Amino acid sequence: MDQERHAILEEYLNQVEDIPTLPHIVIKLFNKIHEPEPNTEELADLIMTDQVLTTRMIRMVNSAFWGLNREVTSVKEAIIFLGLREITNLIYSVSLANTFEHDTPLLKRVRFWEHSFGCALISREIAILAEFQDKELAYLAGLIHDIGEAIIAMQFSAEFEKVVELVLDTHTTFYKAEDMVMHINHTDFGAWLIDKWKLPSILSQVVSYHHRPMDVQDHQMLVSMVRLADLVCLYYQLDFGYSEGEDIMPEIVALWHYLGKRSKKIADIELSNFLESLNKNIQDVKHTVESMYGETVSE
Image (cartoon, rainbow, N blue to C red):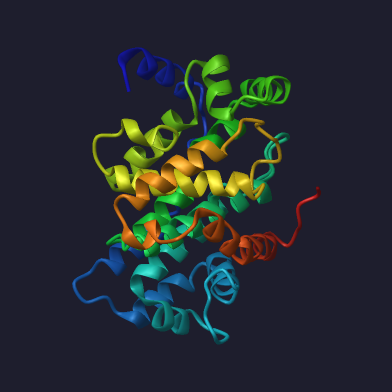
Protein backbone atom coordinates (compact mmCIF):
# COMPACT_ATOMS: atom_id res chain seq x y z
CA MET A 1 0.00 0.00 0.00
CA ASP A 2 1.42 3.39 -0.94
CA GLN A 3 1.75 6.25 1.56
CA GLU A 4 -1.30 8.11 0.30
CA ARG A 5 -3.62 5.11 0.66
CA HIS A 6 -2.11 4.32 4.05
CA ALA A 7 -2.83 7.87 5.23
CA ILE A 8 -6.45 7.61 4.04
CA LEU A 9 -6.80 4.25 5.82
CA GLU A 10 -5.46 5.73 9.06
CA GLU A 11 -7.90 8.63 8.76
CA TYR A 12 -10.83 6.22 8.52
CA LEU A 13 -9.53 3.95 11.28
CA ASN A 14 -9.27 6.90 13.65
CA GLN A 15 -13.06 7.13 13.41
CA VAL A 16 -13.58 3.51 14.47
CA GLU A 17 -14.54 3.09 18.12
CA ASP A 18 -15.25 -0.64 18.19
CA ILE A 19 -12.53 -2.57 16.34
CA PRO A 20 -13.51 -6.22 15.75
CA THR A 21 -11.38 -8.64 17.74
CA LEU A 22 -10.99 -12.39 17.67
CA PRO A 23 -12.58 -13.89 20.82
CA HIS A 24 -10.07 -14.76 23.56
CA ILE A 25 -11.18 -18.38 23.43
CA VAL A 26 -10.09 -18.57 19.78
CA ILE A 27 -6.59 -17.42 20.71
CA LYS A 28 -6.48 -19.99 23.52
CA LEU A 29 -7.71 -22.71 21.15
CA PHE A 30 -5.05 -22.00 18.55
CA ASN A 31 -2.34 -21.99 21.21
CA LYS A 32 -3.66 -25.36 22.34
CA ILE A 33 -3.88 -26.76 18.81
CA HIS A 34 -0.29 -25.75 18.05
CA GLU A 35 1.21 -27.36 21.14
CA PRO A 36 3.83 -30.06 20.30
CA GLU A 37 1.37 -32.78 21.36
CA PRO A 38 -2.17 -31.35 21.43
CA ASN A 39 -4.49 -33.07 23.92
CA THR A 40 -7.86 -33.84 22.34
CA GLU A 41 -9.69 -33.99 25.68
CA GLU A 42 -8.34 -30.61 26.80
CA LEU A 43 -9.14 -29.06 23.43
CA ALA A 44 -12.72 -30.38 23.54
CA ASP A 45 -13.17 -29.13 27.11
CA LEU A 46 -11.94 -25.66 26.14
CA ILE A 47 -14.31 -25.48 23.16
CA MET A 48 -17.26 -26.53 25.31
CA THR A 49 -16.72 -23.56 27.65
CA ASP A 50 -18.27 -21.47 24.86
CA GLN A 51 -21.85 -22.64 24.32
CA VAL A 52 -22.45 -20.65 21.12
CA LEU A 53 -19.19 -21.88 19.58
CA THR A 54 -20.00 -25.47 20.55
CA THR A 55 -23.55 -25.38 19.16
CA ARG A 56 -22.59 -23.82 15.85
CA MET A 57 -19.57 -26.12 15.46
CA ILE A 58 -21.77 -29.20 15.83
CA ARG A 59 -24.31 -27.76 13.37
CA MET A 60 -21.62 -27.06 10.81
CA VAL A 61 -19.79 -30.34 11.14
CA ASN A 62 -23.06 -32.20 10.55
CA SER A 63 -23.93 -30.16 7.49
CA ALA A 64 -23.32 -31.35 3.94
CA PHE A 65 -20.78 -28.51 3.76
CA TRP A 66 -18.30 -30.62 5.73
CA GLY A 67 -19.17 -33.87 4.01
CA LEU A 68 -19.01 -36.41 6.84
CA ASN A 69 -20.92 -39.64 6.31
CA ARG A 70 -22.11 -39.92 9.89
CA GLU A 71 -23.72 -37.72 12.52
CA VAL A 72 -21.36 -36.14 15.02
CA THR A 73 -22.84 -35.49 18.45
CA SER A 74 -19.87 -34.16 20.43
CA VAL A 75 -16.91 -31.83 20.05
CA LYS A 76 -14.51 -34.69 20.76
CA GLU A 77 -16.01 -36.71 17.91
CA ALA A 78 -15.65 -33.72 15.61
CA ILE A 79 -11.96 -33.42 16.44
CA ILE A 80 -11.38 -37.14 15.87
CA PHE A 81 -13.19 -37.27 12.51
CA LEU A 82 -11.99 -33.97 11.07
CA GLY A 83 -8.45 -33.79 12.42
CA LEU A 84 -6.73 -30.72 13.86
CA ARG A 85 -6.26 -28.82 10.58
CA GLU A 86 -9.95 -29.07 9.65
CA ILE A 87 -10.96 -28.26 13.23
CA THR A 88 -8.82 -25.14 12.98
CA ASN A 89 -10.78 -24.02 9.92
CA LEU A 90 -14.07 -24.92 11.58
CA ILE A 91 -13.19 -22.81 14.62
CA TYR A 92 -12.22 -19.88 12.40
CA SER A 93 -15.45 -20.27 10.41
CA VAL A 94 -17.71 -20.22 13.44
CA SER A 95 -15.74 -17.57 15.33
CA LEU A 96 -15.68 -15.16 12.39
CA ALA A 97 -19.38 -15.74 11.79
CA ASN A 98 -19.98 -14.91 15.47
CA THR A 99 -17.77 -11.81 15.33
CA PHE A 100 -19.52 -10.42 12.24
CA GLU A 101 -23.03 -11.71 12.88
CA HIS A 102 -25.14 -8.56 12.85
CA ASP A 103 -27.09 -7.32 9.87
CA THR A 104 -26.46 -3.80 8.65
CA PRO A 105 -29.09 -1.86 6.68
CA LEU A 106 -27.42 -2.67 3.35
CA LEU A 107 -25.43 -5.86 4.03
CA LYS A 108 -27.26 -8.89 5.40
CA ARG A 109 -25.18 -11.39 7.38
CA VAL A 110 -26.63 -14.40 5.57
CA ARG A 111 -25.68 -12.93 2.21
CA PHE A 112 -22.17 -12.04 3.41
CA TRP A 113 -21.45 -15.46 4.90
CA GLU A 114 -22.94 -17.35 1.97
CA HIS A 115 -20.41 -15.59 -0.23
CA SER A 116 -17.56 -16.10 2.25
CA PHE A 117 -18.25 -19.77 2.96
CA GLY A 118 -18.86 -20.38 -0.72
CA CYS A 119 -15.51 -18.86 -1.61
CA ALA A 120 -13.84 -20.92 1.12
CA LEU A 121 -15.34 -24.19 -0.09
CA ILE A 122 -14.63 -23.54 -3.77
CA SER A 123 -11.07 -22.38 -2.98
CA ARG A 124 -10.51 -25.70 -1.26
CA GLU A 125 -12.02 -27.63 -4.17
CA ILE A 126 -9.72 -25.83 -6.62
CA ALA A 127 -6.74 -26.45 -4.33
CA ILE A 128 -7.53 -30.17 -4.30
CA LEU A 129 -7.73 -30.25 -8.10
CA ALA A 130 -4.50 -28.27 -8.42
CA GLU A 131 -2.79 -30.54 -5.88
CA PHE A 132 -1.93 -27.43 -3.90
CA GLN A 133 0.08 -28.37 -0.85
CA ASP A 134 -2.18 -26.70 1.73
CA LYS A 135 -5.86 -26.99 0.93
CA GLU A 136 -6.79 -25.88 4.48
CA LEU A 137 -4.94 -22.62 3.90
CA ALA A 138 -6.86 -22.16 0.64
CA TYR A 139 -10.10 -22.64 2.60
CA LEU A 140 -9.16 -20.03 5.21
CA ALA A 141 -7.96 -17.57 2.57
CA GLY A 142 -11.29 -17.90 0.76
CA LEU A 143 -13.20 -17.47 4.01
CA ILE A 144 -11.63 -14.13 4.94
CA HIS A 145 -10.97 -12.60 1.51
CA ASP A 146 -13.81 -10.05 1.82
CA ILE A 147 -13.66 -9.40 5.56
CA GLY A 148 -12.92 -5.74 4.84
CA GLU A 149 -16.36 -5.43 3.25
CA ALA A 150 -17.96 -6.18 6.59
CA ILE A 151 -15.84 -3.48 8.25
CA ILE A 152 -16.97 -0.84 5.75
CA ALA A 153 -20.65 -1.84 6.06
CA MET A 154 -20.55 -1.92 9.87
CA GLN A 155 -18.33 1.05 10.62
CA PHE A 156 -18.91 3.43 7.71
CA SER A 157 -22.58 3.07 6.83
CA ALA A 158 -22.90 6.45 5.07
CA GLU A 159 -20.01 5.68 2.75
CA PHE A 160 -21.27 2.14 2.17
CA GLU A 161 -24.68 3.51 1.18
CA LYS A 162 -23.00 5.68 -1.47
CA VAL A 163 -20.99 2.65 -2.66
CA VAL A 164 -24.16 0.56 -3.07
CA GLU A 165 -25.89 3.39 -4.94
CA LEU A 166 -22.91 3.65 -7.31
CA VAL A 167 -22.91 -0.12 -7.89
CA LEU A 168 -26.63 -0.08 -8.69
CA ASP A 169 -26.51 3.05 -10.85
CA THR A 170 -23.39 2.29 -12.89
CA HIS A 171 -23.16 -1.53 -12.65
CA THR A 172 -19.56 -1.26 -11.52
CA THR A 173 -17.97 -3.50 -8.88
CA PHE A 174 -17.88 -2.86 -5.14
CA TYR A 175 -14.08 -2.80 -5.41
CA LYS A 176 -14.12 0.07 -7.93
CA ALA A 177 -17.04 1.90 -6.33
CA GLU A 178 -15.31 1.94 -2.93
CA ASP A 179 -12.25 3.55 -4.48
CA MET A 180 -14.44 6.17 -6.13
CA VAL A 181 -16.28 7.00 -2.90
CA MET A 182 -13.62 6.44 -0.22
CA HIS A 183 -10.36 6.49 -2.21
CA ILE A 184 -9.65 3.17 -0.53
CA ASN A 185 -11.40 -0.21 -0.62
CA HIS A 186 -12.25 -3.36 1.30
CA THR A 187 -8.93 -5.02 0.48
CA ASP A 188 -7.13 -2.28 2.42
CA PHE A 189 -9.39 -2.62 5.46
CA GLY A 190 -9.23 -6.40 5.30
CA ALA A 191 -5.43 -6.59 5.12
CA TRP A 192 -5.20 -4.18 8.04
CA LEU A 193 -7.48 -6.40 10.15
CA ILE A 194 -5.55 -9.57 9.26
CA ASP A 195 -2.33 -7.88 10.39
CA LYS A 196 -3.97 -6.60 13.58
CA TRP A 197 -5.17 -10.11 14.40
CA LYS A 198 -1.61 -11.36 13.81
CA LEU A 199 -2.75 -13.97 11.32
CA PRO A 200 -0.17 -15.31 8.82
CA SER A 201 1.12 -12.67 6.40
CA ILE A 202 0.23 -14.88 3.44
CA LEU A 203 -3.45 -14.25 4.28
CA SER A 204 -2.84 -10.51 4.22
CA GLN A 205 -1.38 -10.93 0.72
CA VAL A 206 -4.47 -12.81 -0.44
CA VAL A 207 -6.83 -10.20 0.98
CA SER A 208 -4.79 -7.34 -0.52
CA TYR A 209 -4.48 -8.78 -4.02
CA HIS A 210 -7.52 -10.99 -4.59
CA HIS A 211 -8.93 -8.48 -7.12
CA ARG A 212 -5.63 -8.31 -9.02
CA PRO A 213 -3.88 -11.66 -8.57
CA MET A 214 -1.42 -11.10 -11.41
CA ASP A 215 0.07 -8.12 -9.53
CA VAL A 216 1.13 -10.05 -6.44
CA GLN A 217 4.79 -11.07 -6.28
CA ASP A 218 4.43 -14.03 -3.91
CA HIS A 219 1.76 -16.69 -3.56
CA GLN A 220 0.22 -15.98 -6.97
CA MET A 221 -1.17 -19.51 -7.21
CA LEU A 222 -3.10 -19.17 -3.94
CA VAL A 223 -4.34 -15.65 -4.72
CA SER A 224 -5.50 -16.81 -8.17
CA MET A 225 -7.40 -19.77 -6.70
CA VAL A 226 -9.20 -17.50 -4.25
CA ARG A 227 -10.01 -14.96 -6.96
CA LEU A 228 -11.41 -17.71 -9.20
CA ALA A 229 -13.52 -19.00 -6.30
CA ASP A 230 -14.71 -15.45 -5.62
CA LEU A 231 -15.84 -15.06 -9.24
CA VAL A 232 -17.49 -18.48 -9.31
CA CYS A 233 -19.56 -17.42 -6.29
CA LEU A 234 -20.71 -14.36 -8.24
CA TYR A 235 -21.45 -16.63 -11.22
CA TYR A 236 -23.78 -18.61 -8.93
CA GLN A 237 -25.22 -15.40 -7.42
CA LEU A 238 -23.67 -16.00 -4.03
CA ASP A 239 -23.16 -12.26 -3.71
CA PHE A 240 -24.16 -9.48 -1.32
CA GLY A 241 -27.57 -9.13 -2.93
CA TYR A 242 -26.52 -6.57 -5.54
CA SER A 243 -25.67 -7.41 -9.13
CA GLU A 244 -22.41 -5.71 -10.08
CA GLY A 245 -23.23 -6.06 -13.76
CA GLU A 246 -19.72 -6.58 -15.12
CA ASP A 247 -19.05 -9.60 -17.36
CA ILE A 248 -17.01 -11.94 -15.17
CA MET A 249 -16.62 -14.84 -17.61
CA PRO A 250 -13.49 -13.52 -19.38
CA GLU A 251 -11.66 -13.34 -16.06
CA ILE A 252 -12.93 -16.77 -15.00
CA VAL A 253 -11.65 -18.23 -18.28
CA ALA A 254 -8.29 -16.45 -17.92
CA LEU A 255 -7.77 -17.70 -14.36
CA TRP A 256 -8.77 -21.26 -15.30
CA HIS A 257 -6.23 -21.10 -18.12
CA TYR A 258 -3.56 -19.74 -15.77
CA LEU A 259 -4.16 -22.51 -13.23
CA GLY A 260 -4.29 -25.10 -16.00
CA LYS A 261 -0.74 -24.19 -17.00
CA ARG A 262 0.34 -25.10 -13.47
CA SER A 263 -1.81 -28.16 -12.92
CA LYS A 264 -2.35 -30.98 -15.38
CA LYS A 265 -5.50 -32.08 -13.56
CA ILE A 266 -7.07 -28.66 -14.07
CA ALA A 267 -5.85 -28.51 -17.67
CA ASP A 268 -7.64 -31.81 -18.35
CA ILE A 269 -11.00 -30.54 -17.05
CA GLU A 270 -13.36 -28.43 -19.12
CA LEU A 271 -14.27 -25.23 -17.29
CA SER A 272 -17.97 -25.77 -18.02
CA ASN A 273 -17.79 -29.21 -16.37
CA PHE A 274 -16.07 -27.76 -13.33
CA LEU A 275 -18.72 -25.05 -12.93
CA GLU A 276 -21.53 -27.57 -13.31
CA SER A 277 -19.93 -29.87 -10.72
CA LEU A 278 -20.16 -27.12 -8.08
CA ASN A 279 -23.95 -26.82 -8.13
CA LYS A 280 -24.42 -29.16 -5.15
CA ASN A 281 -21.66 -27.39 -3.21
CA ILE A 282 -23.45 -24.09 -3.68
CA GLN A 283 -26.68 -25.53 -2.29
CA ASP A 284 -24.77 -27.02 0.66
CA VAL A 285 -23.34 -23.59 1.47
CA LYS A 286 -26.79 -21.99 1.47
CA HIS A 287 -28.25 -24.66 3.73
CA THR A 288 -25.31 -24.47 6.14
CA VAL A 289 -25.48 -20.69 6.57
CA GLU A 290 -29.26 -20.83 6.93
CA SER A 291 -28.90 -23.46 9.70
CA MET A 292 -26.27 -21.38 11.49
CA TYR A 293 -28.48 -18.31 11.70
CA GLY A 294 -31.88 -19.96 11.57
CA GLU A 295 -33.03 -17.82 8.65
CA THR A 296 -33.17 -17.82 4.90
CA VAL A 297 -32.40 -15.17 2.33
CA SER A 298 -35.33 -13.25 0.94
CA GLU A 299 -34.97 -13.05 -2.82
